[in-house]
Length: 261
Image 1 (spheres, rainbow, N blue to C red):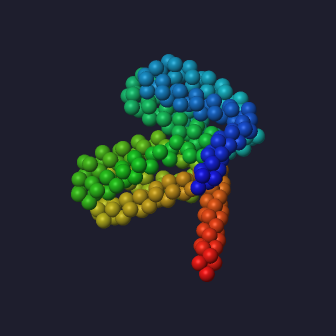
Image 2 (cartoon, rainbow, N blue to C red; image 1 turned 90 degrees about the vertical axis):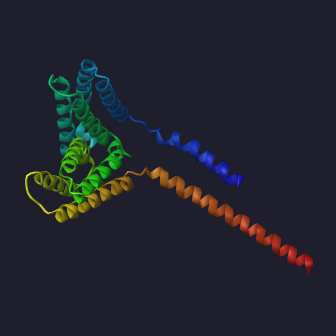
Image 3 (cartoon, rainbow, N blue to C red; image 1 turned 120 degrees about the vertical axis):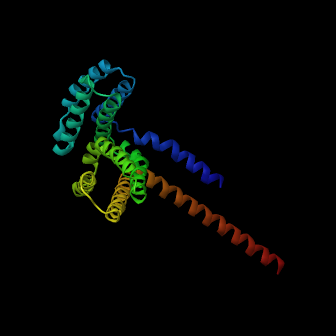
């Protein structure tokens, strides 16, 4: 057992070094942009809009220096980030906009940049609990026939979706995003159209299943390969050690039987 623990500790010390050993200038630039977008968001939350706008300009200049073709950035991903940037910039410039709306627009930009720059575990995955709770509460309000609660929760869902959609545009398959768009649009139409509660409940179940699959697939796709290498290596060592211990125990028991005879 002691050998197993030593091996695990050794691997945990080696992996962080090897993971960042090949930190190219390009990777460094992406990390800077990701960090910069986070700073912009924090400044916005602190209502330091002038500083946020200055940093947005700096971000724009650094971003445009990147060779997107060489980096393999698709036009659709690039367009998603640019649109999120423009909405964030407009929210910081406008004088008649609430702080909550500013933060939501800048957060959308932050999530889009992170989706573009992060190879594993994008930040938008952290919205799972909020989105799934909103869907569950909307379904409950339909069952309870509480129209006012349904409208309030629908607005919350629409705001949340608007915030994370640019990141989804970058990370998800077009077909799945189209399905989610259609499901959201159907709900929005229900504001003015008369639809039976049974149909709405069925639709909410469909949406919950779609979002559950989305988060599950993205978590699986964004698992760091080095994690599985560690699991496989440690598992192999544990299996080997247990086999060796079992074999020694068997030899000892066999020797005892011989001595008794």
